[in-house]
Length: 489
Image 1 (cartoon, one colour):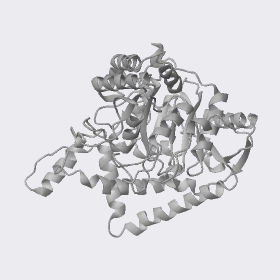
Image 2: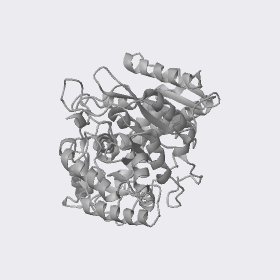
Image 3: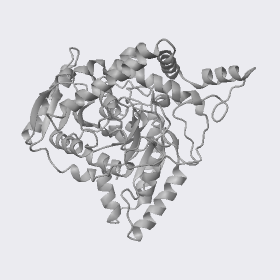
Image 4: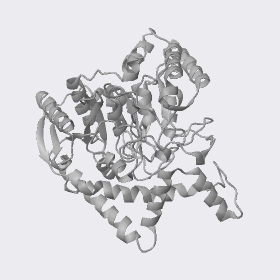
């Protein structure tokens, strides 16, 4: 039952070959047996899940079926869920219980989804490893051949990715500010898409960097991700950045094929230090698309080399502004002091982890008097150039193909001493956030140590359909069927 894809499970539920209660019960049992080892969930809600499953069964019995009726999902702990604790992986939110539902989760509930619980994540979505969570690290369900040392699942949506890969959910919500959907998808051997900025509402999603954050799904297959995105998307008047555009049938686009498409390969994504395995997989991906009728064209994104540095000015600046609301006065953790200033200091010192403090300090610095023009304003100008690069490239091609990440999953504790080394994990994913374009990671192969590697498909704004068509073509050619090590034990 747990090996069914979301699309297969949905078909079985609709054919009454399977009940939503049976399916939900199977996932809750899997969580019971594996979550202690993986720490993918910070909160499991079995009673609410089974109640939603029973309601789904009743709907199906009446012949009523939503897009996701009876499908068990994990919800990243960045999405506010009415009456259910939401912490953003931080001590400072303590036992915050939202009185409202985020628009994305409201849309999923509208379509009949069953929520299993809240997935672990890097604190306030700041991290590429899921090591910064106040609830402890998430462990990747994959391990290297002959080496049981724990690996990171990627971040910040590491709990969501680990849950989907380890068969602890059929799919999951996630967010991507600089690669936080695509990099964990690559590290955990699953599919994940960051849609166009504005495609999914940000209302009710705890903010990190408001001009970059975008919600999207993680799932085991490209088609499953397309089904989930169909429910998550849509215009929302409560979000001023929400785009009032139609939501197409993303899942249908997966069957389109790529014949006649032009696929751009950006020359700047070839770096001197790129592992030969990733370069080889990238070449293989191009060959797979050629064999299915696509043309491969060389394109240039000349300002790509500045994207990471620009991101680490813009994102911390916006984080510094967004996180100012956590002051111990209105909600969350409160650590008293002798006066109001001391209350703020004590609360934030105890409530925020080291990485969040680092980024708040960087952001406050680049926004401060005398530095705003030199850093933040200049970064915004470079961001405009990065967007122009993508716009120019898409004059010559329909989609871009790149690696998703510069490495496979690394060990917990590796790369942790130097923040810049950690930040370099996002080198291939950040440009799409700066430009607001959609990006999909597809599991495409294994490295020599048996760890999954992903290929990334980037598309024009609001052309997720072409991205899914290309991603599904890669998925068919790759035939990726490897299972995480934890499932073999």
